[in-house]
Length: 173
Image 1 (tube, rainbow, N blue to C red):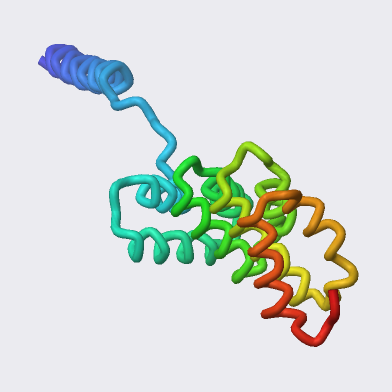
Image 2 (cartoon, helix red, strand yellow):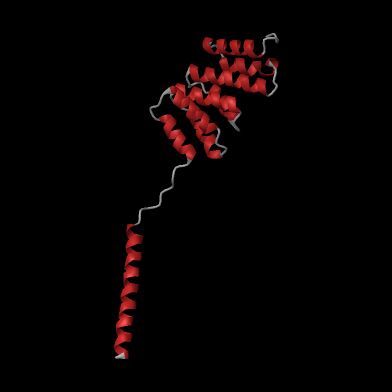
């Protein structure tokens, strides 16, 4: 009788091991695929690009600018390149206001892109002037670049004149 117990005990162990192995194979085959979860910055960018109010969009862009990561800075720069002028203007203003790393280069690239709208370029021109003023530059140091970027466009010329009057009122042109 002792031999029978060993056999039935062995069969039970083999059955349990087979059930565990079968469960492992099924779990492996039917487990959901691992997907990268979107980062906080990516979620915010998606919300910015969704249909939200302008105030909500502004708040989201500010929130994005407060995330200290390369991903967030890249996404903020991407928003500055947006085809939607309101989104681009908000992102450019935030790059300026928050002094985001790499922000001045992005602002200059928008300003120098002649295919961009007057609104985006005008916002970039104002932001560039503000950034340069904050860093201690004089009007004399930046005026040739600013005027060159404005070219003969009366809207951009008006923008640099307003920025100059506001930021460097005591300097002569």
